[in-house]
Length: 140
Length: 109
Image (cartoon, rainbow over the protein chains, first blue to last red):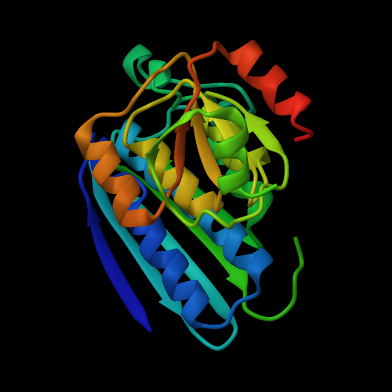
């Protein structure tokens, strides 16, 4: 099963709606409560990252017998320093976003903590984040 | 303690009502949303000064029992509509954060 969502930059009002839909799909596949919670946290953080930092892009969910995989692909401007971006507490979010409680610098660390596989590639043309959850087993 | 019992004991204003018999399993306090996402547990009451619509998305994704706004803060109509759509209970405490939490501790949460 493959499902693709379009995501607009700076659309804070819709933020979380794609994650909610993916969470519902995870439930419909009979995933454990714990795994559904991990999917929800990781998806939400990645969705918010795209809204705050990117020019917009697409989110694609891919489910097969073994894996629940989500790919977040945006059209730029890219993450300048991936190592710094993974560091808890480091942020480039605007003051406006920070005043709303976003941009704590915990997004990528939160994602990594909750997934089974994590792949992050970035250039000025765009960022690709691929996260995977094993359908069987609770490995995190 | 259930959401209904907390409402009755505090007399705080309920500006949206979700499932009132949901038990409250502790409290999480926080305004930085990633800390809330990363550290809070399902069925907790979430105390926050954030009032924008995205708070509802988090309350729903994290499956909180109730959202508690402090300082008499309310939410705009868009956020309230989202709370209605997602069945999220919201209480408004007239007290600042510290006193709100003191009250919750006094009640055994």
